Image 1 (spheres, rainbow, N blue to C red):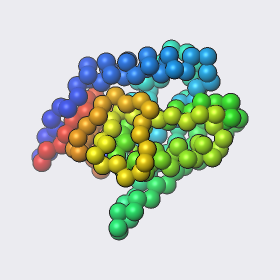
Image 2 (cartoon, rainbow, N blue to C red):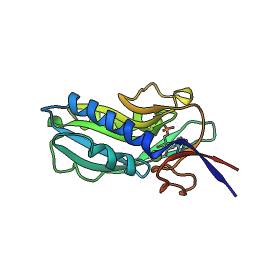
Image 3 (spheres, rainbow, N blue to C red):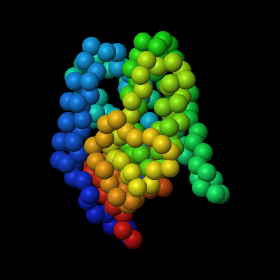
Length: 174
Ligand code: IMP
Ligand code: MG
């Protein structure tokens, strides 16, 4: 049986998300903001974060999956996305919302995708940042917590599709 130890409680997360929402509110005041939730991991974080942004926000979704190659050359596949096909991205400031930045490959791919589509600006908001594992040259513009090289679950993050529903962020121990 695995047991989970709490790394960040519901209260810790709520406070950090509130503070992040306030910072984003200030930075995007009077600007057209398109929030892009990266599925599946960011679904809970994004739903809490957009409710802490005071102002007009358009919400959309995209799916990203990362694959590790034999020699650790990571490959990321990204879906078409839902919720922005009908708009001119050159008018919109994109905020990509992701659960965790690890090697950085996923967010680099997504950032390039939206830049190539002509978005007015592209920024990154993450719940968790594991800087020690970074491979791609990329850093989040907004983050709630910086963590060490530990595998975490809960609040949207999974281990083999389990634990996404935990209300807190935890570490699995065997
Ligand atoms: P990156 O492309 O290496 O930055 O990978 C990011 C993706 O890896 C995230 O979207 C997660 O799906 C997954 N991931 C990385 N670290 C963890 C973790 O500690 N727990 C759960 N998923 C993780
Ligand atoms: Mg993910």
